Amino acid sequence: LRADLAQLKEQIQELRRTTLQVRHASEDPRLAELTARVEDLERLLRRHTASLDGVFHRGEEAATALYHEVLASRMRPFSEITSGHARLVRDLARQLGKEVTLELIGGSTPVDRDILAKLESPVTHMLRNAVDHGIESPAERTASGKAIPARIELEARHQASQLIVEIRDDGRGID
Image (cartoon, rainbow, N blue to C red):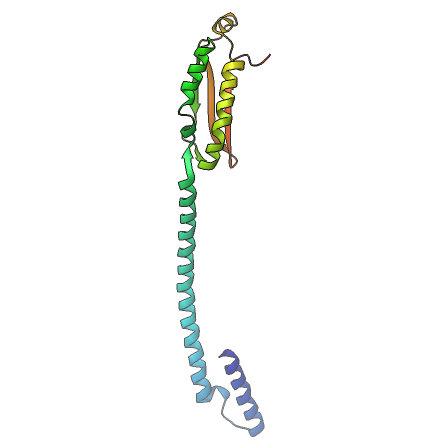
């Protein structure tokens, strides 16, 4: 319509030049009607554009919320894989003649369930190694002035968008 309107204005101006019409181009009723229609359509288009912008914005918000809900549904607390570890540490320590307690830090830390499943075996292995090789016997701990029972800390936390799992003990470690 804009192009047609511009073309019509040019044609009217050309007619004025060639026929020496006195009337001004804006006085032509066809041009005035076409200009009014273009302005009405522009207003209508602006209203619809604003309405569509709102619809698209709400759609984006809904999609983002849904995405975050899906991610959250995959998350499980770290403590799901550690429920049996306290008993494992206690039983293994008893078998080896040691006294050890396990402290879980960050058990509520959310972890993707696939990653959680992959962590269970390595965490179990590291706890076994800590009890077996890192913690000394009660006699050695007493001789070196350490408290009984020995302590193992299992910590899970998020740092810089990564899951950090740390296992610390207060034993002498491996010679």
